[in-house]
Length: 224
Ligand code: 6GU
Image 1 (cartoon, rainbow, N blue to C red):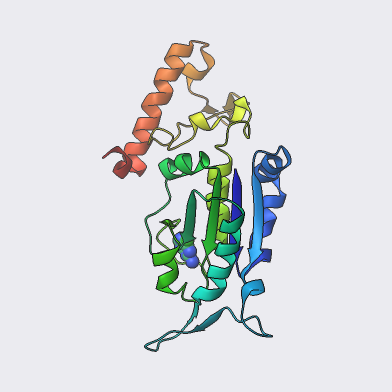
Image 2 (tube, protein in one colour; image 1 turned 45 degrees about the vertical axis):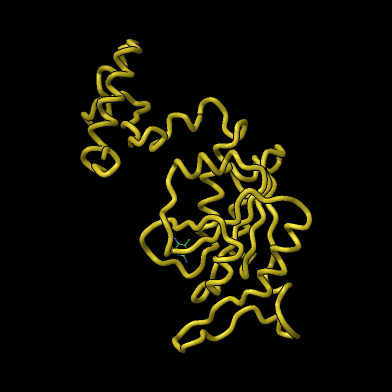
């Protein structure tokens, strides 16, 4: 999978890709991530990429031409399955979306800043808009890193068996059950008996019950 990220803050977003799971995925050749500094497509000596909004109001808006130049260049090199715009005024990211995106070949992620992008960018280029939750971040860069982590870890071969994504919270719309490791007793707090029983069908049954119970308590909306 190839991901092209268009941003005005490339330095803000690079470090998660230089560590841990995403780094390994890239080293194994399972994911390829390219950063494009929007400023390189900006106007004049100052490489201007934003301007005041028509109609007045605080905050700058990213202009369409630099973004169009960058996207057109990328599209002249390959075909993209999705052009995603990270913005708080969109549907929230969930596991189903991450699963679908992990099957794509080439995607572009555009991150907004300031007041966001000119609406015509969204109308003309963007095929999917994603928010990562009901709160406001300064820019879409950290949200893009979150999206990439959620997607890249699902690419076959990225995770080993022991960390398989198949048992994640949300994989079947349930939260994960509680987990325990040594010691089997700590200051009188005992690990549930069933987990020490060696009876695997019973353990599975207990885990399903606990997952359901947790979900009902904390995120009943997932059960609707
Ligand atoms: Cl995608 N961008 C920004 N700026 N804030 C957010 C977000 C995205 N998702 C949640 N908050």
